[in-house]
Image 1 (spheres, helix red, strand yellow):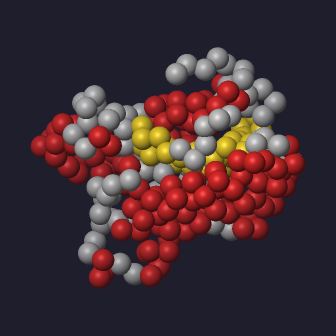
Image 2 (cartoon, one colour):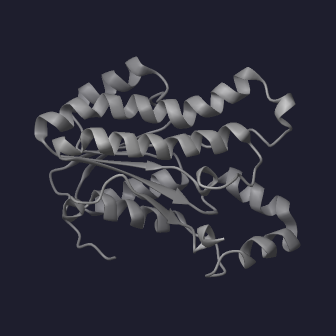
Length: 236
């Protein structure tokens, strides 16, 4: 779906995880649509800190659009469950799930006052199936983001706030995903491609397209949804 530029004029957007990849592409897209975009990453605002997020949102005077893109595997690799430490588990869950909760909680009062809001969370295909990385905390946190999206859609719809989720497939968007892809080698890469109906990987712009759709003012009757943007991989 192609949405005309300028539909977000006057809207203030907060996008987390904008240092690279998907978050960066989303921020750029919303700017192109006319929104005033404030992008943050782990070096500017810690999304797992309630006080840091609350202070930042207050400094903006409110947010109309929130996109939760921060998270990831936090530099971890898959290992047997008995080798996973408490700190490793919490690090991934906090970065993905707790950060999403904290950011949503911070922006909702302003959205309620205005009677309008758009919240989009970037989950993962790992949250709908299994993680190719084998990182248990990542798959669990991404699945929990989907459940949190449904619950927030149920709670906030009466205030004119829609809450949706995107579950990306394999996207070469940052050094971690590129290293993961390269680790599979030609045979492993081809196996992954064979399980994608369109036979190619996605891009960060593909995910930004989905966000653009969900935050459009015309998408006012779409909430509680999880959209798989994965070239059809979720069919299998």
